Image (cartoon, rainbow, N blue to C red; front, side, top):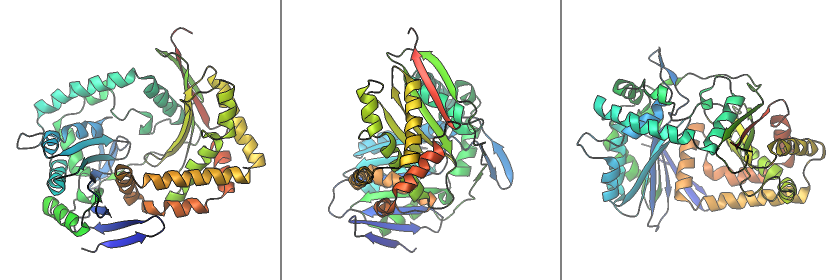
Length: 424
């Protein structure tokens, strides 16, 4: 086992990387003298991977399997529940499912190795019966109905259905009440066998730990078999949105909106593209931007307004939204601001201030064990080092940010989703 150690002197961080004989990727950020630990162990399998090839055979699964499986993985063969076991051992465990990841994690200040072994054991050992799966179905259905009534959730998924015609990212990660009714114990077991193999997984740890010891524990618990990696079937989308506007009525105090545009992520410098996209949005409509200040002053937006980027399952999207008395006006003003930036560019001092603010946020983020480990998990699959981000950010130009905005937020590709009060 070869452990590669890279010391990033400019940010005072070290990253240790290894690939075990079973194919598991391991990332360790040693923090000598610290009393806290964070570990995450997960699979590159999420809600968007509903169709895949394994041993040349195609498998099609209902919406919501990855999330359903996450719910059931905490049951252990000895009758215990991993959440309760780890909590009793001083850990704070949890999990989440996204479009392309399912991650299980814990924080602790004691009994780290014991909790790590429990994490590795329960995630790699499926244990459920027809009865327990059926019981969970009602719990998840209730969760789905609850989120269906959430305006923030509704405005987001309505936007995704505007931007995508058939890609699974247009559907709720948890699936629908109807789709989860098709899921049974055999479905969950088949997807665990396909995706929960070491060669499709990653373990990330931060704390006062020894990378060799972490790798040894992983090999001890998981064994040497790598398993065959599945091949998720990629859904290709037309660049044009399915539609540009949608509106619905819900129980909200003021109109809620979310605008956005989808684009195809690069096959090249993944880290740079993500940094450019995030900085470009800060420049366009961040809280210190001229656009934000003007619309806030005019009462068109309030402090709920926010913008962001996401790169789920071989696609990418930029969004911005919040509450507004006139969502269409905000939409038009934002696209007008993009047009102005395309013609005039960014004022040099403003660009440098925004870049320094972004750099400061990046450096502060390195103090958060959770954020670093989860970022390392994503980076391991995409082939970049999270601690390279400050150097990349320092080299980004104003022209790159301008070109990204002009290329992405066009009138033809930007859609608007609005939720209005039932009585307005």
